[in-house]
Amino acid sequence: MKTKYIFLTGGVLSSVGKGVTGAALGRLLKERGYQVAIQKLDPYINVDPGTMSPYQHGEVYVLDDGSETDLDLGHYERFIDTSLNKVCNVTTGQVYEEVISKERRGDYLGGTIQVIPHITNEMKRRIGLVSKTTGAEIVLVEVGGTVGDIESLPFLESLRQMRSDVGRENSFYIHVTWVPHIGATGELKTKPTQHSVRELRSIGISPDMIIARSDYPVDEDLRDKIALFCDVEKRAVIPMVTTDNLYEIPLTLERAKVGNFVMERMNFQARQEPDWQPWKEMVAKMRREKPEVEIALVGKYVELHDAYMSVREALQHAGIEVGVDVKIKWIHSSKLEKGTLTEHLESADGILVPGGFGERGTEGKIKAIRYARENKIPYLGLCLGMQLMVVEFARQILRDDQVNSTEFEPQTPHPVIDLMPDQRDITEMGGTMRLGLYPCQLQPGTKAAQAYDKDLVEERHRHRFELNNAYREIFEKAGMRFSGLSPDNRLVEIAELTDHPFMLGTQFHPEFLSRPYRPHPLFVAFLNAVQGGVRSNE
Image (cartoon, rainbow, N blue to C red; front, side, top):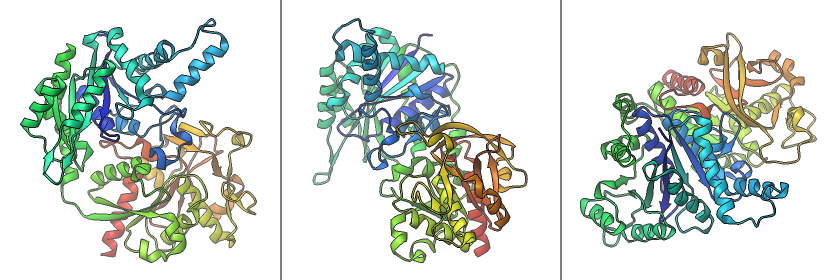
């Protein structure tokens, strides 16, 4: 069949839930037997989020091919359980960069370059690449931001043109909008939704479905009102009440018959009957009362939890497998540099230090790592979390507090973490790190090998600095085991301590490959160690 396109726009305010809605709808269509891919169109002029502060844009999510993308691609991969590629995240910066490059080469034969048709044609070309590169039969496309934003207008114009290009039966428009609650009167108000749809229709797009997001139930009268004033069928007005569990959303959409309505309007049939039993069982396990464990997540961006979105989800996935309810204690690493460790860490059953860049807060993370080592508290370090685990260990065995990474102290006498050789002459920051999927050879008899239960794995990376091989022999003699290495034995991928219940760090980011059905083995091993420690303490 011809590729089907489903376009998602947002109204009233940003962060309304388009990404999760698209991911959940993708799951509905996959359950019906179709190959699905999802694309995010980001209106910002940055080429990608790789050089953006997490405070600006949350987590930078990395794909197999090394693309640094929006965090929504994490939702997409976790829900539809597939690996996406670089064409699945398009930014205005990428589009303009491509068009200007073509103009400089003379590809436009001296023509005047304009938003229409040159920019919009490039946007449509990139939308079309998704099915060609992934084999997807259904492509969902989410436009970042909110209808009415100046920067998103070229993307919306491209989506408007797509209906003519691919045909009415192959295009479907969903508008995800916010229905606010007025506390003084206790009412939900549909007027912002009406204005948002009017704005969308003025661009030339009439939504086929409206997802009405709200913190409170949307009753039948409100659905009637939205349907009447926004010119959509009532059955296409789908209430979506805020939930504390994102994985319930596909079940909510299924109950609302969203999948059936989309297929009916786009004239195709389900290839198989959806089997939601495994998904329902997973959600039921999440809801079931379980023993609580507290994980101290020590980072520098903890004010914005989205900066560690994949870590949070990976802990939840592993918690389902292990049978524990994971409570994250968000600890700003800078606070550990000033206050006493016990007031922040003594209640923690496990300590996790995630990835990050820059010197701010690193000494606080090192203090947390020392606390975990000395008190035999299970520890998991991710990327920078592994590097600082090495720094802390080296300071102990070399008896020198000047031990450091050259990222933070270029003149350190003991550069136990240093730039990779092929990174030394790089001057541009964007897209130049070690990025994407690389193999890791596991060493027999280690905690890492036991967790994975295999010899060779592939994991996603995002870093410039590596463990300095000049110190490997010293560390191994002192009790640090390098349990994961690159196949050529040149790079350390996993380090662990032999005299500790569980103290393990990875140079890669295992959180990017965790799925609700398949929690990552290292997160499972970490929580098993945490649970064992809790039991032994009791």
